[in-house]
Length: 162
Image 1: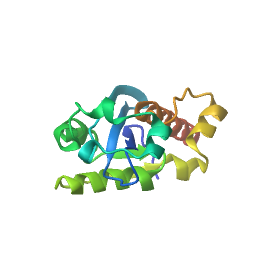
Image 2 (image 1 turned 45 degrees about the horizontal axis):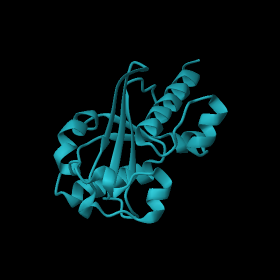
Image 3 (image 1 turned 120 degrees about the vertical axis):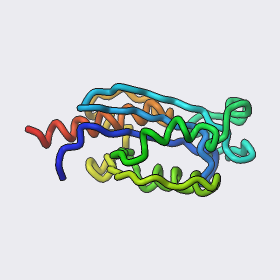
């Protein structure tokens, strides 16, 4: 695999066990190994329904998302960073499932993109990797997780270059 210096790192938090229940998106754009953009969006999940377990994980509650737009209303902001891009997540099985299921829930088409997984690269949990490599992390805040993921992927690229 050739080096990928331009990519989008993304992370989703969900309101419940259903993957289409996205309540926060964190997105980081990296161009030539430099973070150029950061985006954090709170999203109202379907019926603004949350499980107590998910609230304990990320701290997002229905009160915080009741006035926020649903995913289909913000997709136009996210899509340019996904379509025909390299997309990096720490657990692509989860995050890409969230993206695909949410797009399907709102009858939106899934764009072409190529995904890369920092969990598969490093084989460790995000919080442990951040501690190991001195990366700041507010775990389960989608933007903080996406920034950490971007930094890990840049580190991986740098190590492969040398």
